[in-house]
Image: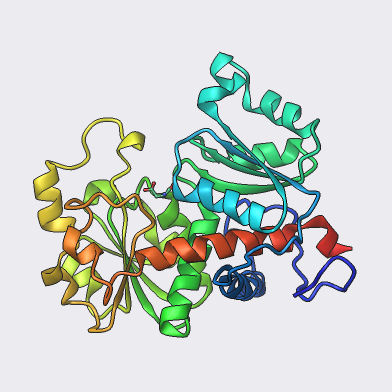
Length: 318
Ligand code: ASP
């Protein structure tokens, strides 16, 4: 792993991480491989590796978050950075400040990384045009959540030994999900065959643009799959009602043992969380350690965020 005074091991050409778009397979493998090192380091008693000593990370969150915010915070701290957490409820945005003004204000304090989560698709890109530091997309509207897809890929690779050639079903509210979009792009880039499974009201208009196959029947969609990913209903992004009732939704679209029996016998289950038990997935199945790798995803999340900051670290490029 490269340090301040040695040549970088990876030729990682990007300044920001705004989405999966624009990443090559080599870029993705560089992130996954660096993350593997951090997985091991994070399992040691001493978890600090001060690659980012003297750097400042600002977590700028305009939407709630549990996993993403805490894992970026932990990732930054384990790399020795100073970490500031800003959420909209205690910022000037509540008083009417625009995203650009907030960005310019923060930029004047010379941060080295800004992680931004925002309800509007495209907000991180706008921010990246205005600031001098690296911008990392922590989830923008229904658009992208690149670090989630990367940690999903790392979780899958560690369990299955590869991603190329696997069959992956992504099930649930595809229409509103940034996790679905980033995963469709990333998994197809890495050579997986991706099925998307949703009711007609929650399906995207052009699955062929992503190179994925749509299904409305969940049993057919997950048939013979190696990986099944469930997604929450993104009610905060819905105007009106998209499903008849929660009970009916679970009956047709919730993952339970009977539906899971259509996947490969050794298929694993992923979910980015939050898990709404009894809606997108049966509660007992979500806790089945033979099947569910949901907590592994959380562990991989810290390592992936360390890897992303490692590769975006300006000194790594000198
Ligand atoms: N945590 C993920 C996201 O921020 C998934 C979700 O909220 O449903 O998109």
